[in-house]
Image 1 (cartoon, helix red, strand yellow):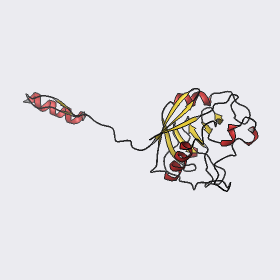
Image 2 (cartoon, rainbow, N blue to C red; image 1 turned 60 degrees about the vertical axis):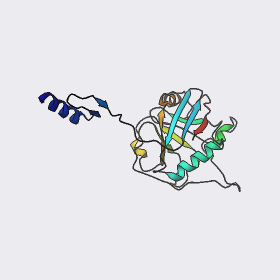
Image 3 (tube, rainbow, N blue to C red; image 1 turned 180 degrees about the horizontal axis):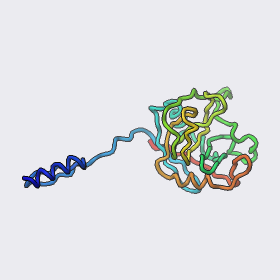
Image 4 (tube, one colour; image 1 turned 180 degrees about the vertical axis):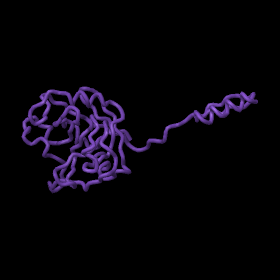
Amino acid sequence: MRVCRLLSKIVAIAAIGLVVGCGGKTEVVPSLPPPDHGPKAIIKTKFGEMHMKFYPDLAPKHVENFLKLARSGFYNGTIFHRVIPGFMIQGGDPNTKSSLRKETYGQGGPKDEKGNPILLKAEFSETPHKRGIVSMARANEPDTAGSQFFIVVEVSPFLDRKYTVFGEITRGLGVADKIAGLPRNDHDLPNERVEMTITVIE
């Protein structure tokens, strides 16, 4: 009896999901992770793949915009045009599809049928810019995000509540590290092109 009581206490304290009965069989109750519903994305580069999940509860419009662009092939052939070791890598500018328009890198974005820029209203949150976070790049004004995004490779709290967090890299952050460490020019443009292809997994 004492052994059984001791076992019961240990099991309760450890909370490992085991049900132990005196003289009976041990039943293992699996501890399942919370469901992770919704689409995901794979960012493919010559250095490998980065798997991304989204935060529609934090930034529904930004997630919707990114998925729409990715499904249409908007990002395919664009490059990571700004890389800073120990900080982040940035991409998603349609101007970067042409290697002859380097002076316009960082200025492009999606447009409507009339040719006007499509800009998103900021959806700032309390989510910190930790390593792996995917956030939207923008101009000086808050409501100016379009298609450009960046992946954080080191904790960057100075970005918190100033840029819209809408996703996170769950696998393949080593790829981002390789891109961040590439030799670059004075404008943080890598010396070699790193094109991306984004596939949405429904």
